Each structure stands twice: as structure tokens, then as C-alpha cells.
Image 1 (spheres, rainbow over the protein chains, first blue to last red):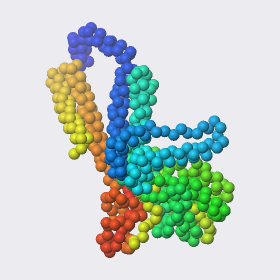
Image 2 (image 1 turned 45 degrees about the vertical axis):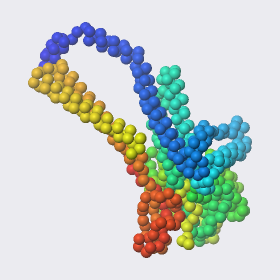
Image 3 (image 1 turned 90 degrees about the vertical axis):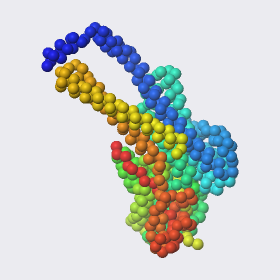
Image 4 (image 1 turned 180 degrees about the vertical axis):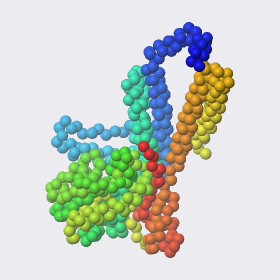
Length: 376
Length: 134
């Protein structure tokens, strides 16, 4: 059989085939990189179209929703275009003294700017609808930023034909698209006012509060006194059901200072990033301030608990960072009851009857009210 | 049907057509290769045809996989949100689709307990996501 193959091959082979083959190898030798660049550019171009679709879709949905509250679609569209590219310049940290205070000031300014912008953009919206719209707009701005960055590298790569620029963005594309998809879905959750994965802390707090009366403790933070296992528990959460995180650090500081540090423990509940392989809604306990803010709130909590030597416990609910900004998954919502059991156990075993305890449900309270409403 | 959905359907049908054509051509090549080797004892062109056919089927498989992903993308757009309610009197549990204005803790003005007729309170709002395996 081998003889037959060789015979047929000899009969049909000619020098021209060899020349073609050598030319092909030479082309591949010199142009393989360029061909690779073109393939990657094609992939980036496709991803860029998708990112643009996400950004436009989120913008259109925002314009559609915001225009229901006192301004025409054209006006809202113009205002959205005006705020696109809005940024915050972080404080200088070459001299770290006072950086937290300066950061807090800048974050306050950023939030005030956005709130005032929403007053202008949707004057007839209620307080919590405005908060939802503000954070829906934040999703639109995030998508716009992602699109701009990818476009920047795409054009830069196209202009320079530099493999490194293109390879960098091409390799990050799956993750970039995953993040963009999450923001795109988040904008829908904020539009509808649905709890997100990050709302698990406030959801646990609400269930602990039950139908008890609440009071405003600090800016956009409410508190309620309740009895848990014979201990007096101050439950803290952001003021809902609009999209708010409030200033839980300020609230905890104020509550502790008001009682001159007479608290046996501070228990903080928050969503935390899960590692790949870990189950969504897995609960973990630890020590420290469970809060994912840029710094000021965590700083206040650490400062005040250290000042009075109050133990600081953390209970976290593990979830994918992208689940944290999209509609709450069923397994996360169902974890709330188990978290409450853990809080009870912690209070029962680590404090004495009659002690004062703070339980803070940290996170965005969108779609979560302040207490279980009573039937009138 | 929205413009985007029409575009998605158009692309889906186009790819389905391409899938059928490539599959048919690939099967023809496989038959040709098989026939060349067994009946005509052509051991140069036969394996080549066979290889072409198998490669074609590989491409068809990739297209089918991409199409299934397009389907999954469509399902993702239709993510449903559910509201879990509990009767304030007897604790009867109920689940329905989310309605604008629902929030956890609210006594729903439009829902009555099917068991005792009392008001129902929203206790959770969530979505269902199929866990992707790594």
C-alpha cells in the first residue's frame, strides 16, 4: 500500500506545488503576526460593537425612565450627554496625613453633585425614585467609560499595529464583556427598583427590625431598637427603599459616642466577593469592619471601636462581585434567615443578657424598606 | 417584536442555513473520500477528501455551538424577577412576578391571602439564575 501511495504521489507531484508550499511558509513566517493582529482586531471590533450596544441600550432605558418625571426626552438626552465622562480625582497621597478626610470630602462633593443633577434632570421624581435614577445613571456612565477605554486601545492598536496593545485588550475581553453585561443588567434592576446582591445586609437588618419604629440616625441611615435574646440591639441600615448606602460609619460612631462606648459588640453584615469554586450565598464569619466603601466609613468604625475597645464582628455572604450589582439571586435572598440565626448565636454566646449591641446591615438598600409595614 | 429581536432572528436563520449547507458539503466529502479509498483505491485524494469532510463537520459543530450561545443570550435578556409574599395573619406563602412599586417590607395593596383573605407582605424579591459550571 505504501508503494502505491508513493507511486501516485510521484505521478501527481510537480515542482509548482513545492514552490507554492515554500511561498506559503515564507508568507506565514513574515506575516503570521500581522494576520494574528487582524484576527484579534476583528474580535475587539465585534466586542466594541457589543459594548456600544450595551451603552446605548442603557442610555435609552435611562432616558425613557427619567423623562417620566418632568422633562422631555430631548432634554434628558442632552443632560445625559453632558454628564458623560464625569470623573472624580482622588486625593493626593504623597502626604498621607488627612487623606481619609480629604477623600470623604471629595466623595461628599461627588454625591452632592449627582443629587443636584438628578433634581435638575427629574424634578418631579420622589426622593427614592431620584436615588434609583441616580444609580441607574451611574451604570450608564460606567458602561460609557468601559466603551471609551476599549475604543481607545482599539484605535491605538489599529494606528500603531502594535501587537502588545491589541493583545492586552483582546485577552481581557471576556472579563470586560462580563463586567459590561453586569452593568447593563444592573441598570434594569435600578430602573425597576429591585433589590441587588449587595442589598443582603439591609435585608437582614430589615428582618431583625421587624415592625419596630425606626428613627434617622445619620445621613440616609435609619436605626431601630429591638430585643434579641434579652440584649438591647440597635439595628442599623441605609434608608430605603431607594438606592442608598448612606453613611453607616457615621451612624455607628454617633451611636457609640452617644452612649459613651457602652456597647458590648458591633456586628456587621455585608456581601463579600466569593472566590471561584465557592458557592453563591455561602456565609462566613470573621473579625473586622465588613464594609466595602472607599475608606472613610470603615475608618470611622475602626477608630471608634478601637477607642472604646468594642469587639467588631463580621458576617459576610459570599457572592460574585457582578451578582452584587444585579438583581438579587434567590439563594442570596434565602440566606438572610440563616444569617439572622448566626447573629442570634453570636449575641447569645458572646454577650450577656442586658448588654447593648449594634447590628449593622451594610450595603445598598434598593428595593428594601425600613421596617415590616403594619396593616392599617 | 423589537428591531433587535428581528435582527437576532435574522442572524439565527442565516447561520442555520449556513450550518445545513456546510454539513451537507462535509458529508458529501466524507462519502467521496470513503468511496475513493475503498472502491477506487485512490490513497492520495481519498484521505484528503475525508479530512476536508471531517474539518467541515468540525466547523459545523462550532457554528452550532455559537448558535446555542446566541439562544442563551436571548434567554438572559428575559430574566424574570419574582416577589415572595407572606400573609400577615396566617403566614401563607405566595410567589408571583415582580410588579413596579414592590419592595421588601411593603404590605401589597393588590394581594390578598388565598387562604384567609388577609393582606400580604413582600418578604423577598429575587431572580433565578442557572449556575454556570467552570
